[in-house]
Image 1: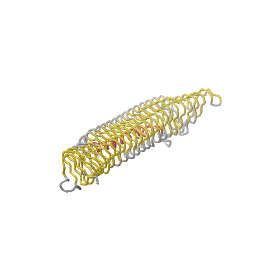
Image 2: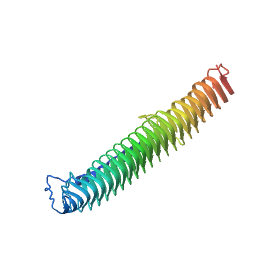
Image 3: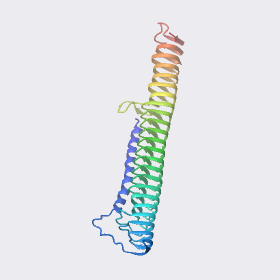
Image 4: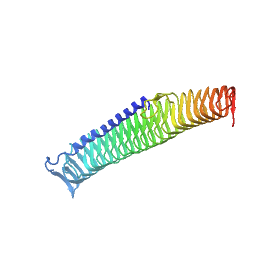
Length: 424
């Protein structure tokens, strides 16, 4: 890879570490707050003023069960509320609490399961599940599944599956799979894959397979298979197979087999096969086969192979090239270039088949038509070469140019002006 890509890989690692830090720190603090030491705390008192009939009605205090409206300073040992539960201070231990309806708290409503609508001045916390409409000044957190509409000033964190629409000023994090729409000012992180739309100011990261749209102001990273659109202001990085659109402001990188459209400002890189359109303002590198339309402008320094100390200046480079390949400076195929290949300066391949046009063309074998200032065929030319200087060790075809050399012609006919022919 090029020095630029080495730097890019290091940057992606730092982005991932930052995303993990974003995921762990807010959740760890909120979990500590929501799990007080039950061994040191006194048993709950359920003193309350109850205006109820069989727990139906209005309750003021720490009643265990209420069907209606319940107002309490600090929840401790709560079991169930169906209706409205309003608290004014941070809760204590409520491991079995279930709130169906509205859970509101000046500090942070907390229960084992919350279903309905929840509001917290600082946080909303659920141990098993949080479902419905949830809003918090700092964080909405569930250690289990989380679904519905989730809005938080700092972070939305789900320990299980995260589904629906989640919006946070800093981060939206799911330790399970994310399904739906996630919007965050800094990062969206899904540890078991994502389906839907993820948009983040810094990085949209999926640690598993991703389907849909991922947009990061700095980077879009998928560590599994990507099916859909990945857009990164700096880079779009797909570590598994990819199909769809990959767009990076500087680089688009795919480590597995990919298909579709890949665009970048500086470098488009594939470590596996790619079929479709690959375009870059700089270089396009494919470690295996590149099929379809490939377009680039400027050649940049890059290592010849992984772990190699040798460098070259490729524009478009692949093991095999097929389709339409166009670059402003340099095209290289380690094995075969087939179809139509056009380069502004240099074109080389072990075997060239089809139509190739470049000022300097070098090949082991030619099977087709080549046009350039200097055409050098190391082994066998089967076809037509047009240029100022044409050279072939073995000619079976026609050379047209100022000087034409065919190594298999009789002496006196090997080097000829204007035209040289050997058809047998």
